[in-house]
Amino acid sequence: MKKKLSYRDKLLELAHIYNVKEIQEYIKRRKTLTSGQIELILRKNNIVIPKDFRTNFFKENITKPLSRASKQIDDFKDDSKKAVSKFSRKLVYIKEDSSRSIGRFFYNLWKNAGNIGLSFLNIIPKLGKTVFSSSTTILTNVFHEIYNQKINPTKARTAIVSFFVIVGVVAILISGGTAYKNSENNFQNSIVKKPEVKIKKEVKKPEVKIKKEVKKPEVKIKKEVKKPKVKIKKEVKKPEVKKNEKVADLILPDLNLKTETVLTLFKDVNYDLNKVKFDKTVKPIYFTQLPKDLDELKNVKLKKETFIKIILPLIVAENERILDDRYKLKNITSRKITTDDEKQWLRQKFLEYKVKKGSIEDLTTKMDIIPASIAIAQAAKESGWGTSRFALEGNAIFGQWTWNGKGIAPLDRDKTKNHKILRFPILRASVKAYTKNLNTHKSYQKFRLKRKSLRAENKKIIGLELTKTLDNYAETGSEYTKILDQIIRQNRLMDYEPVKLANSSPRKSLNL
Image (tube, rainbow, N blue to C red; front, side):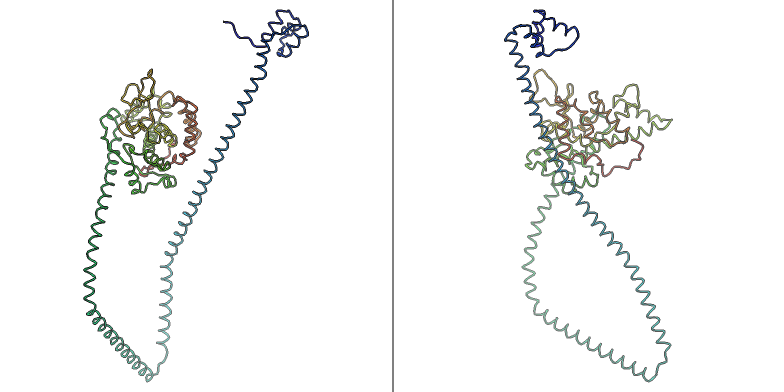
């Protein structure tokens, strides 16, 4: 097969055939000539250029530049669209931030007003004491002055007698008035007794009906609320099992959770995402599975919020467990002497995180948290916000592949491939497997090294700083990481990164 020569190479061959010395001298001097210059030298030497040469020249010098220009125009259009979308997103973020700042301003104003009111109430007892002390001093002074003055005895007798006479007359008038009023009231009560009895008989019946009507919905509400509470208790107990080998024995029956039941539970416990963002704490509510009818919610915002409310406590709980282990590791390595239990614990962690040769540095690099923003974004992408077949049938919210274990076969899988989506008994097992995958698999070494550099620089582990290192998680590569960035920014998932569990114990800072 002969190579397809370019227009310039063909012109050089033509110059070699006709032995054009001027072109050969330029080549010996290692000077590059353009196709136009070679063409002019050949025409000077009266050498005819074939027509098929010119067709290639037309393609290279006219059609290709035009196609490049059209590509540049398309790229410019795409860049302008991206800039406009970024600007619109920034406007949305500014609106949300301004609304939050206004809410915080009014909250602080109300809080300060309450503090002022409490301080005022604290001042009232002191004022009462001062007024009481001043009034007693004034009265004592008045009585002392009266006592010290000389009084005429005749005038004093007349004054005392008149005082007692006036008091007696007033007492007689008051007693007579009260006796007259009591007699009138008794007379009126004797007249009104019969209609009062009638009214009581008429009112008794509707009161009984209202009580019967109210009792039934109260019993229904208690029954509906009790079921999810029992489920939550089961979910909390089962993922606390330490041995990973016995997870297969902990498969729960199909509880058929409904979205309506989940929403009523969130209302009962006052679970609000805005409050979570403001307080930076979330209640430890653990679900074993997602509601089967989550996709039937027509409100997209409510669907996303429900998914985040279910997934967030599981991710935060797993990160807190990792931080506890990390704190314990730092505490052990900071001391010179270790106990037998601590040595056994280190051996288990070396096996869990697949650390070779007992390297403490490698274990410290691998034993670290996954930012909540990345975990929620990947769960949303892989499970379709909790509505995919793998998430509903096998609690597989992160789409992890398996070739040996039990899994769900994809419907659109190629015949040449035999992988499956790994199935889990409960949602927390899926979260735990996901964190272990990112912390141990060789495909995510860039992710772990970037996270380690952020720790070394005493910076916060932010999801948007680490998304580009996850291009090996999906076959699309960089396009997958762009989608993750978009999900995090559009849904403000970075606000959930500092969130902790409400019942988490305080952890001493040991440069984790």
